Structures are given as C-alpha cells and as structure tokens.
Length: 70
Image (cartoon, rainbow, N blue to C red; front, side, top):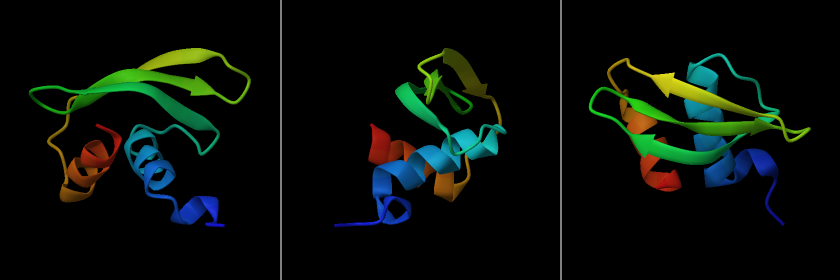
C-alpha cells in the first residue's frame, strides 16, 4: 500500500492548494484551468466547502499537478 504522501493525486492537490495557503487537511473537489492560472472548489475534512483561485503564472510543478487532476 502506498503512503499518502507518495500518491500523485494527493501530492498534486497539496501543490495547488498549498500555493494558495491552504493546509494538507483540504482537498480539491473540482478544478479548472484558467487563462492565467486555475480555480475550483475545495473542501475541508469536516465537509465545509470553499472556492479557490490562482491568477499567478503557472509554475512547471503546478502544470504537472493540474495534468494529474484533470
């Protein structure tokens, strides 16, 4: 069994949400690339949802993360 930190999907979520200041206890429910970055809906472990958006130029790592989650 893989450890969570090795799972590509979890790593990708951590990269995208971490870049916006969200902690590891958040996960992505929906994600869409935008012209300048990405946006979507996330949820905390307790089920509370939130919206997120990055308008910064994408890094190579963020591009990889989006490709994993798309």
